Length: 504
View 1 (cartoon, rainbow, N blue to C red):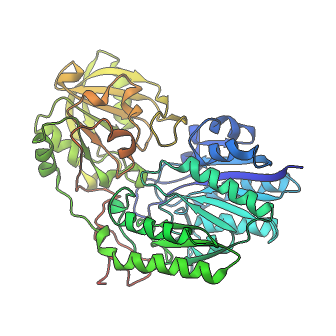
View 2 (cartoon, rainbow, N blue to C red):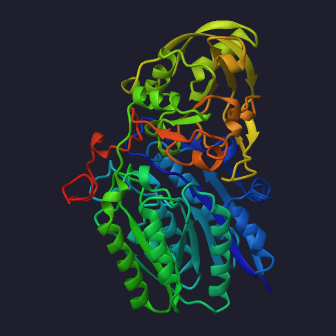
View 3 (cartoon, rainbow, N blue to C red):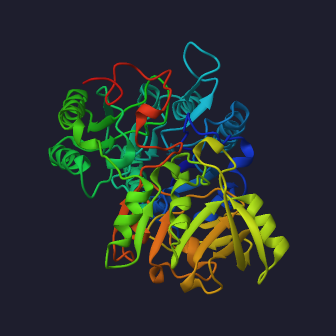
């Protein structure tokens, strides 16, 4: 008889300093599904749920869906939205009747308004709250295994209320599917009595900026190598490293190492503490100085190979950025840059473009509307090259096969009527994380033919764009809610002292 396993996803990366609110509507549209629709939405995709589904048969798991909800990173989640989603998940578990296990796909950096300790107005650990609700419902005898994003801020509640946490190993996150497969196999091992997982969490006083958290270079290479050494030892199931999402302003924010051992709590503790000690030892490697827009543009123009990516890291919607800051865009337009492409969140511009129609020309005020402190709108006269409903399928290596929608979308050409002789701007009605080259291709633009690509992303763009960016990429220092300079933010709740906010 197959093991009955309930599964679900509630995922949000919350930026305490983002001006973009996160209500239930933020989880709507293409990013929420319930019941059997969860299967339809994720079948054949390179996602964690896609991984659950693909190995369920061979592992003798009967998967029972609840809901799958995701929102683009933004401010902490409204309490009402969190309560509704948690309620749907718990109701789904309850409705399943007898179950043998629970598989979850959480983020690990979701904050929820009103959950903070000691201050009802502060946001607190939403993922831990979900896991606690699940544990309270199913009891201690039903194993819970959850996938977590590499940018999780792992908390005591997450560890206490789960049997095993499976953290992504890659940044950019191109291993979601593999971690889903791993989580399902681990749960099957627990259900079959082959694994008795015990966990240990170590959290040195570190809150490293995300700018140097990539796993192909920098300090994460050394940390993952040390984790692999531990995983080669008998008794260690896995060692997960979450270097943190530093824009979570709450007491347990910070780098975390969670080790899972087979029945040996002391071994799990030794592994977690050792990897955490190495992280503290090399903490300075997480810091990086970036050029300002004018210097970055000059460097890009001096490179012979094209295209060159200008990464506007501080306005990364995938980290809670507004998606409409203008400092880098203004520098490019003021310099008369042509043969370039950019994406921008700007519903007002989209509406004006639709009113003008394809082939029309109009004056536009680009960006700068969500938070004017990050840069005023840029006035341009532009030609409307194309209009779209904004629906497309991700083709890059991250979440491959997922259908997404970014609302009505317009392609504007500044400086000319031919794509190759102008600055092409893709404006959308909805915020998005523009990490996949399809953000241009679905509206008929080919990014590999541009001279410069202005991408509002911190690091995930690399998986899809670096293979076509012959001139490489340049990260730019500019205003935004996801700036790598953490000293710009008014932290209130993180533990102190903590690196790099305080002297080490």
